[in-house]
Length: 251
Image (cartoon, rainbow, N blue to C red; front, side, top):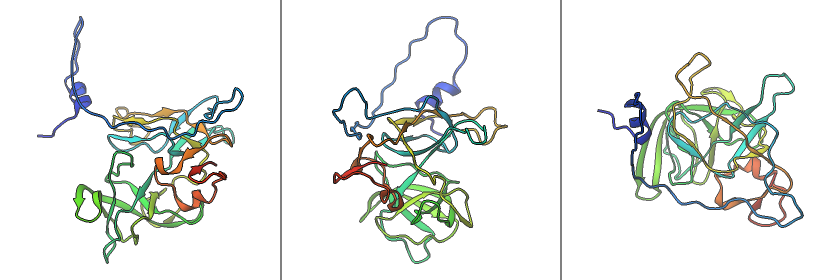
């Protein structure tokens, strides 16, 4: 028997009741922390949004979260008139040096890190945003606790991926071969935490799967985040930091 979470139980047992239904549930959620630097200047906010949002092209494959300050790529779709799209820059911090064969990798698991799923495409964060690198596919995911690294996700990969503690992995645009990262032009931020509750549509023909639409805030010169409070930022992106204040990040 598969154990279902609160939302899944509601969906599985849903039906029609011509009246009022009261339900109760309890649970726990993590705390919050402010990631955007508040600046005092005239009548301008630190968060600026485009006129319209777009379709999220790379939602998580299951229940997961993105967090305030996560970097994203926003494309208004004007060039080819294809419609606006959004991509999440998914990042994963390596928790310990990989074993000799490199097919198993441990990444940090806590309340403020992206959750990996079987079928995800990963690669070492490239030195430059558009540089290609070797991609692998996640074939197994296990939540465990390592005596040295602490709480981790232990990933089994389709091929060896050399990495050491502190390295950052990112989502790749494909699952094998030499490819670019999913996000090559980070230009926006997630303005708040977002929960992914439903399984996404596998393709345009998947009627039952969920479609996610969102509007990120643009990476303007006035938008700063606290670097140590957001998801791990790859070195190629850190190199674009325009902030002259230590510990602040801006694009």
